[in-house]
Image (tube, rainbow, N blue to C red):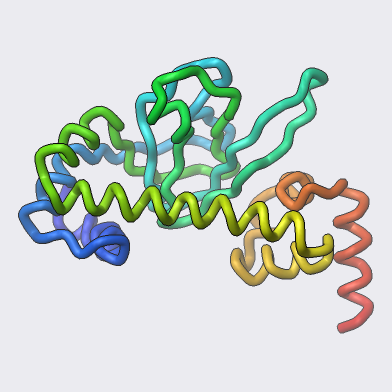
Amino acid sequence: MSEYKMDPLLKNIRKIYPISKNSSEQLKGIFKEKKFKKKATLSFKNHISTKFYIVKSGILRSYITDDKGKEFIKFIYTKHSVVGAFCSLIRKKEKNVIIDCLTNCDLIEVDFAEFKNLANSNQEILQLYNNLLELLFIKLENRFYELSSLNATQLYLKFKKDNPGIENLIPLYHIASYLNITPVQLSRIRKDLYKTK
């Protein structure tokens, strides 16, 4: 993998923790560039995860299903997101989370065991890992806060602000699921907002 291709990714990684050039080279050594087609599944239900991903381009989702097969989207991931079934990765247990691609995706695949081994031998990578876990925790806490404190219209407007143009890239029913509302509710919200313009 060329230095030129990796520069933008490393730049974003260094925002999490400013690792040195030597640590960057070690990290790059366990990175694998992967291309996935739309609808490809990265993480299956009732399997133990061993890998996580960094999004170079594309959109993914993580979701769970109920006993009737209804889907509930937990997160939607876009460029530079870190994606994985982290409870399964850390605890080495089966999980009920499914991760798949909503568009064609260019990803960096990372074997979690290799990453942990690197973190155990490199203090900078260990600090990067700690900071990453903190960011993931904050993201999860913010998600719970938004779902419990914002109404449907506020949730939609915030989603649009955080993800400009995404409505033209993925089906609206996925957005409705992520916002924990029905597609009909989302259609009404969009219609009402259009009227007020």
